[in-house]
Image (cartoon, rainbow, N blue to C red; front, side, top):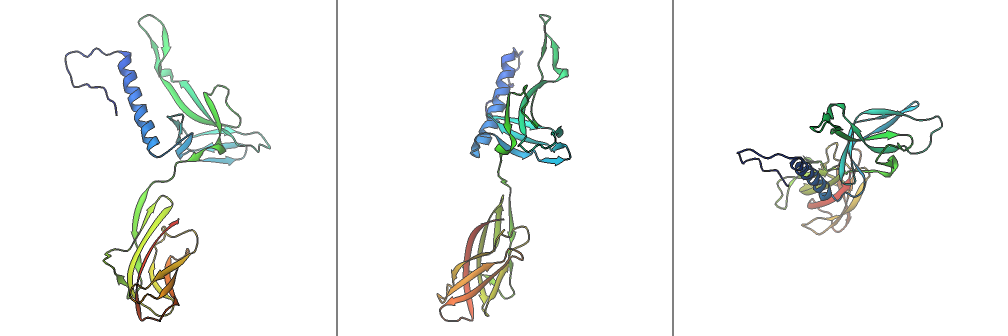
Length: 250
């Protein structure tokens, strides 16, 4: 990102243009970061939860990206009329901080601390720079990432050069990688997905025993995370090697 070089001594001729350069550099960097995630339009970056309590709305702290700028949302409440059944509004406003009242050398007083934030209201704020209905804003997807080990069934061991059986969670998406050798006895448990990494729906699909070529059905239980296989076609086998790689929503 752009920066102001302050490494040279000798009396820096500081001007307002230098502050503008710093401000523009920071704003451009933030805009580029958001652009890296393909964000377009107005998007809630975090927080900004709105909950009705009686005749008013409670808004939690957060931030909204709008028109290439990040607008902070401070915790606040706003009232709603009885019988209100429309989506309220986010208002992007600019206010003067009293601490920024400065008397210039020419004797003129200027307000130089501009607080730019987003606030909620039942109807658009006429003083706002712009207003957007709350139901028109999406949220930045959760990009957090974590990995958990699958719990292998008794007698099951990693196979096919695998040394670790895992499920990788990125936001609400999970990628499961299971490569295991296991004794087969009817419907057979291969492994269990830990709590917090389990799918929102039951999953089923087809897999093969890599040794015999027999066809198996695998099933993932959304409630207890159990991954089981059962023979569909081919000769029954005493043991099998299975590779299951699937993605699902948590």
